[in-house]
Image (cartoon, rainbow, N blue to C red; front, side, top):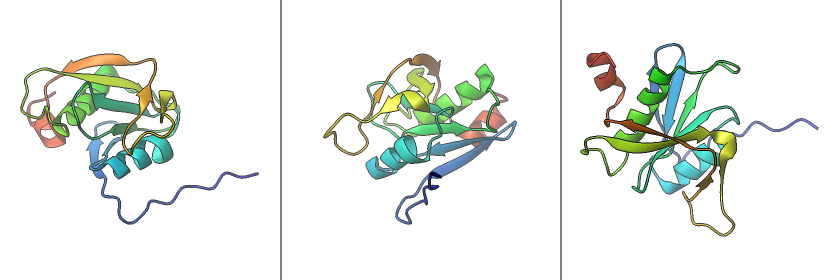
Length: 137
């Protein structure tokens, strides 16, 4: 049986950034966006990011299937996650990073709440795509 491709609900407003090397970063703006992005839109091999212990958007890094991002690309996506959180004006921010396959929703949890496994923590300064390019990072 073929799996249906999820269609993006019209009320969602995801933020999209393009990174060098054909990488796309998608950011949820609301709890509903975060649920859809992390649990429906994300492919198992995509990378998932969120600032540790601070409210903010869920971030997905997508590329060509089978291609692995380098550490710099992961740090750029983490910096975008930090920017789209309440830690936007902080110095160094701890960002959790894992494959989307390790992101699950606990039973009866409210929108935007997830559990993660096999995380790696990246310490980055909050920035968006244009700022990263301007500073050569």
